[in-house]
Image 1 (cartoon, rainbow, N blue to C red):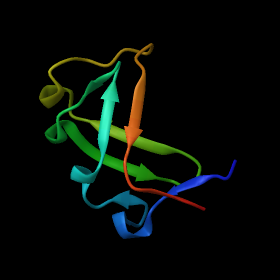
Image 2: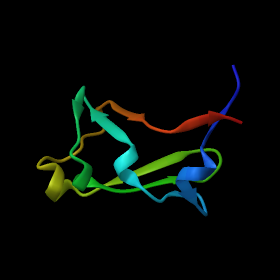
Image 3: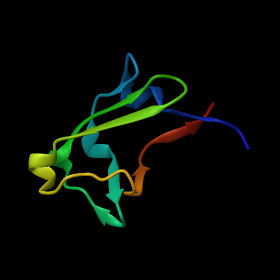
Image 4: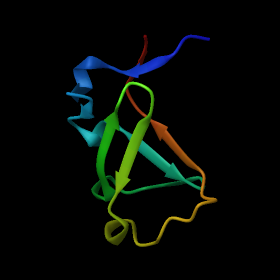
Length: 74
């Protein structure tokens, strides 16, 4: 299996420039787009920052988070 990187059309200096093109699911429930603060690709890890006020709940260490968006093979 090949590694994946954020498509260059959707990031600037490793940060997704349009978070509206992404879906984030927490424990199977889609997060509202206004809860997504940033999506950053630091080449080995994708870091998602969420605004928990807009999310309307806190994240717990056991929560399952899934990211869906424009990805391409490296």
